[in-house]
Amino acid sequence: MNRLSTDERVALSAAAQQVSVSDEFIAGCTALRGWLAQRQAPLSDRRWRRFVALARVAAASEGRSAVDRLDLGLAPYIAAPRPEDIAPLEAWFIDEVL
Image (cartoon, rainbow, N blue to C red; front, top):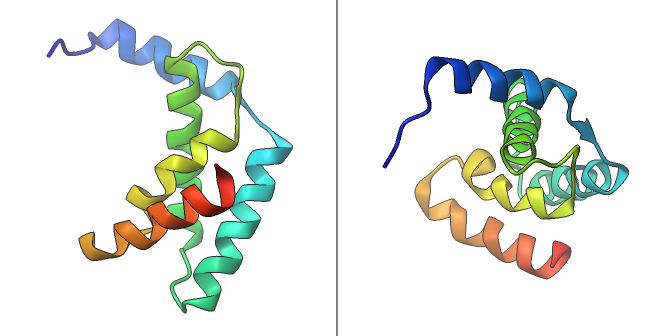
């Protein structure tokens, strides 16, 4: 596996800052927040910011100018407090987003 050079990381970080957050992504985050609240598993503001930042980097790395609903597929790996909690979040993504 090739690692990114320092210049590539800097460029990707700069590109991610230019990626916009779509309305459909925000709506998905709102739905996810409700789903997590029902299960008494809310995310901290810090983890929400990390999730959005990760989605922006994912979009930038693919040359996209905005995050979209499919970027919600990253949620299980940010929102799950324990490894065993990933599967229900993946099921949420499949049922609600796909």
